[in-house]
Image 1 (cartoon, rainbow, N blue to C red):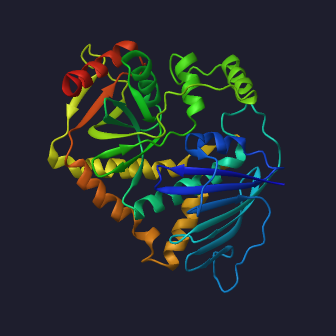
Image 2: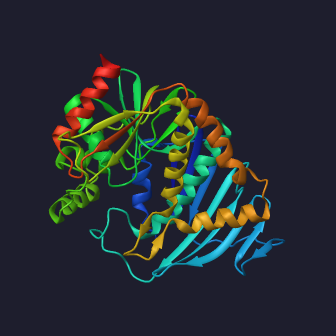
Length: 365
C-alpha cells in the first residue's frame, strides 16, 4: 500500500513523497509539514521511497558503481549500518523523479535521536534538488535563520553551536517577532520567503526549553509522546509568509573575553561584500557534511554523486549552480547592511537583550 504526501512551496515549486506503508518515514513529513497540502498537480519533484527497478542502461560506469548519463544518476551504496539504492531521473532539469530504497542493520530507538536514520539521505537529496529547481526560477535557498516583524526580515547566519535557533526562540517569546525558518530560508530579489523545517520541534523548544541545548531525557520522551499522539500546536513558524530583507547578521560564538560586554557588533564595509558572499556559500556547503554517527550514515553521499555527475558533464546546470547562486547573492547583499555579531561562549538573556536592542534601535525605531 502506498502513501502519497503533497507539498507546495509558495506556489513556486511542488513536490510529492510516495512511500510504501512498511517504511517508517514519519520524520521526513514532519520536516516539510508547513508546506503540506491535500492535492497538487504536475509536481516538479517526486520522491518514491520503496523498492524499484532501475533504468540504468546506456550509462557511463564511474568508480565501478555510479551509473551516469545526461540528466540521470543511479548507484547502490552503503554506510556502516545501512545500505541504500538511489536513482535520480531528471537529475538537473525537467521534472525530477527520485527513487530511493534503504535497508538497515538495526532499528534505531525513537529516543536515540530527533531524526531517524533513513531520512538523512532522502532529505539531502530533496533539499539539494529543491535548491536547483528554485535557483532556475530565481529563488535561492540558503542555510540561515530569519526573523521578521512588520513585513521586515533579518537573516541570522551562523554555523551550528552559535545559538542561532535559541536567538530565534527568544525573539519569538520575548520580542514579538515571527520566524521564517531557523535553519533555511529562501531569498528572491529583496525578499525573504519562509522555509520552515520541522516546525513542531521549534515550537516545542520555544515552549519548553530555555535554549536549544537543553534536551534532557524527560523532554525527549515528552516530545516523542506529543508526536505520537499528533498533538496539534500553534507554531511560531510562518510557512506562507515573505518580507523585505532589511539586514544580514553573521552570528559567531566566542570563548574570549570581550571587555565586559556580552556582545560585540561590527558593521561590514561594502568592500567586504565578497567575504559575505563566500561565507554564505561556505555555510551552504558545510550543510552537506552533516553526520549521524550513531547510525553510520550522513548526508555526504549526495555530494559525491553530484561531483561524479559533474565530472562526466562539466557544463551541466549542477556544475554551474554555485556560480549562478553567487552572482545573484552578490546583487542581493549589496543593497543591505551586513553585520558581524560575536556572542559569548555561554548563552545568556543579557546577550539576547543586547542583540534585540541593536535590531530595535537600528531598524525598528
